[in-house]
Length: 93
Image (tube, rainbow, N blue to C red; front, side, top):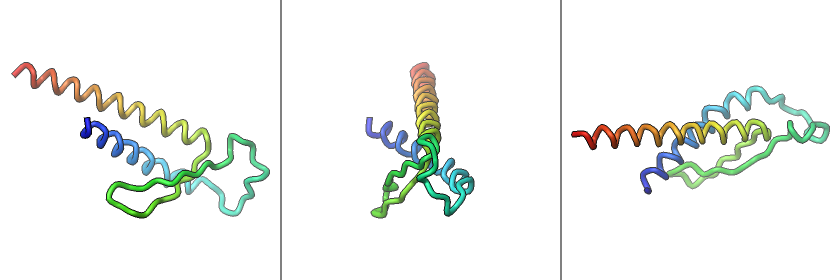
């Protein structure tokens, strides 16, 4: 159980790190957020990486957070499928 949770954390972090550079390059610096519609407003969260005591601020729009969540769910489903197939193969030995 703990191994699965660790894998999920790593996959979630990998998904966040994969999208973060692209999102930071796309954002125009110096724009005021007051004139943006709700869909384009940045939502910031603090995340502490495993093995670190420093938190990191990660900001994305609602759509980007939703996309990251969907990617995390897809990664989880793929991991579970691999675990199931591995247990089936090991069970046949």
